[in-house]
Length: 218
Image (tube, rainbow, N blue to C red; front, side):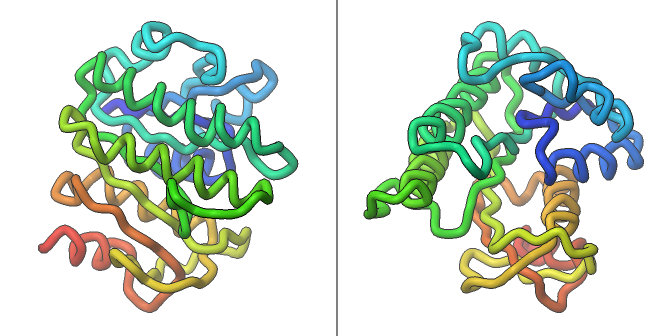
């Protein structure tokens, strides 16, 4: 299986790349800066240089050729303003989904955010972020050509992963280590029956594999 991850140098993405590479998958991570390439290689992933804020759908589609699944894990990140929340968290997500449709890569995972809502109100940067994420999610949810799953983690931490989560359509708020989010994403990729689901995830008491099988109806 070949997996292409947008936002390949992100903290969740690097953890996911290590997990997928350890499973024997071929993994490519899209990055914006060439100096990030060595970190991806160390994680077992092929670095692909492409700026999702300026690339065309054709350029991104070329990087998705031959992929079995695509994961959108990009984000403007802390310290960025409302404008980049729109160009990355919304715009790049839409571009990446359109490129997947263009290339025929059906399996599509999106790392979103708890509270994402296109109608979220407020004038702060975080409000713009939640709107951007919500608009991107809504766009992907409307694409019949994709077998999408949207994952909305709670408050992200750098704590060691426990492998124990609560994964449901609605969990309520709570923290979760980035390592456990990556573990859930890896299981979702291996569980196509989760297509069409929008899920929230926080730390809990259920092993990741069991939690994913449960939401898949297995």
